[in-house]
Image 1 (cartoon, rainbow, N blue to C red):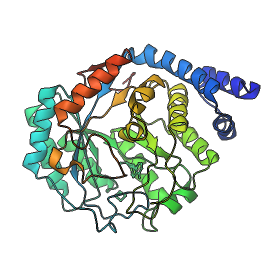
Image 2: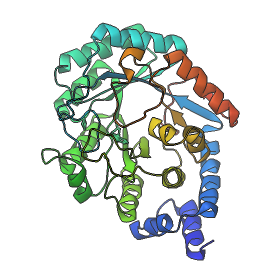
Image 3: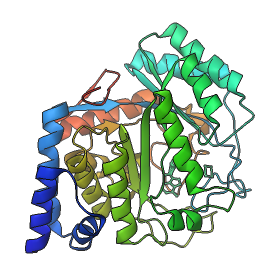
Length: 350
Ligand code: 5AD
Ligand code: FES
């Protein structure tokens, strides 16, 4: 093994911090041996804070209308071959009820940036879910909105918010997004969510088009400094109806290595083994857990709409019922010595 890489990994293991250049050195010298050692260190922290428990979050993809035009995303505004749908408040609440019955204590309401749902609509949905299930944690993932709106959702009962930063490098951010979206505004939103008191999930795509290992190192440094409660990462996967249709997808190896490094950087962080990871490899999510992840997010959306929420090509779990996905994941986790738990799944230390 490269001696310097080994030394850096040991330093990270004791200090939970490296310089951006040092993270880059690790990424540039990744090989199986280094990955195995990082995963071993990562599992030590995973075991210390979460044992062999894997948290579940039920994901309801309630609208694929989006006012944005992110270059990588399959539901971007300019994709006219995307069949659009919106779920009614009643349907969303039914998904939450079904999730609750299946044992989910966290529900994630995710959608494109669809302003046909007013703040009142969103608050109403949150209040209805909380009224039926006091112990269900409502998580939102609906993009950039004003601080005032975020405040209203919090008052209605939402307690977590997922908003990936996508990349910590403003220049790369500008290449992945249209001009009307800015990195500064994304950061402002994350800051606002934090200030209001949400548990915040940030995150980034691994090996998105044009991303260098220095950019990725910046993402690791960002997580080290910002300390989001959750960090969702997955490989970039091309979607045929986007400008990045021909860009190569991110790799399993880099994603797994990043997961292990993130666990070492912030031992308590909530780290999902994402659907994108499960899409690039049939055992991707299991491998993600073994690399240090501790959360899976099965889909609770009605099967009729699942294929339409295609952020990238070949997304898995678009045909299965919620209960099937849950059963499947339960078995997958058991096969590697972990178990799914019915628990709101707070970050350790909260
Ligand atoms: N490949 C991988 N991840 C993607 N996302 C959007 N499009 C893609 C893609 N083509 C991720 C983004 C977004 C999250 C909901 O899905 O990081 O924040
Ligand atoms: Fe919807 Fe990017 S295309 S958030």
